[in-house]
Image (cartoon, rainbow, N blue to C red; front, side, top):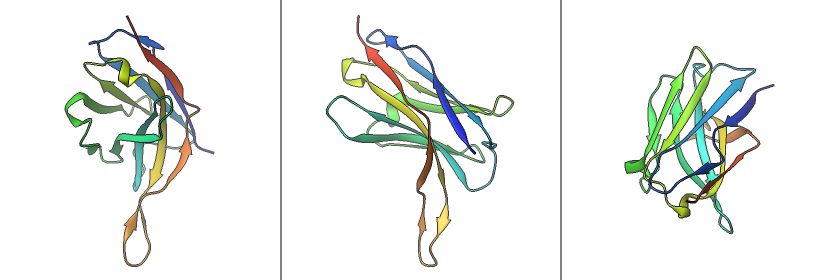
Length: 126
């Protein structure tokens, strides 16, 4: 059973960098065909995909957040991290890490999310 656990500060000041880690157990982040994602949900809004890191270390970012987002990994700890720079109160949200698997239907590829962390609240405030 794969488990993901987010960790990091719950309060970040405006203009600073938000840093979160996701520790994975029950599976390796280097296993082929899996992607490791960061997703957030702001108050009153839907889920927003922020980016992902693949099993080979390749990274993918949401175009709207790409200029402020960096995702990296520490394979020795089986952990991947999110950094979001120049935060503002609009970045206040519950942040989730999640796994997705690259699948092929026979005619197209798709990548459903299957395991999620419990989420961690991050508030941006002075």
